[in-house]
Amino acid sequence: QVQLVESGGGLVQAGGSLRLSCAGSGSIFRNYVMGWYRQAPEKQRELVAFITSGGITSYSDSVKGRFTISRDNAKNTVYLQMNSLKPEDTAVYYCNFKYTALGRNYWGQGTQVTVSS
Image 1 (spheres, rainbow, N blue to C red):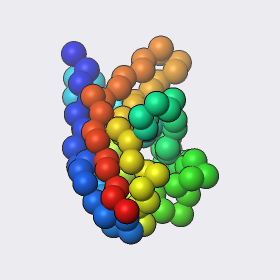
Image 2 (cartoon, rainbow, N blue to C red):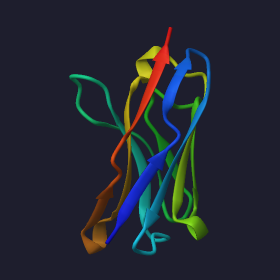
Image 3 (tube, rainbow, N blue to C red):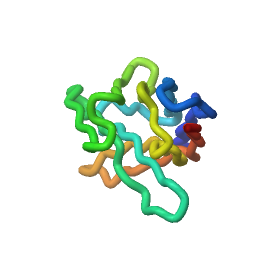
Image 4 (spheres, rainbow, N blue to C red):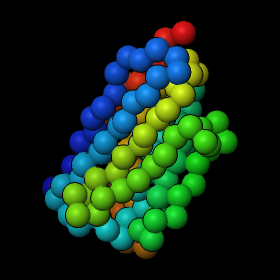
């Protein structure tokens, strides 16, 4: 059974940093695209960043230059380093592992990030 477990969320002041981790188990994920999404209250879930199996990264405009996504295939883990956090970054953050060709799409349970002003 595939499971994604996130960690690293919490409360931080504006300008601070947090590092999210998401560890997968139950399969081998080196060929998956790994990503982070977030959902703020009363808003739709949005893509924050993703990283391909080859290490190509992409970011939403709102986090570009502040957040960095990385992965460790040996640990089946994806990370999101978040710097210069802003109150508008407050949301539940979800990790996602996707392998479209095989129809595989897995989600973590979500971790709360709260940035105080």
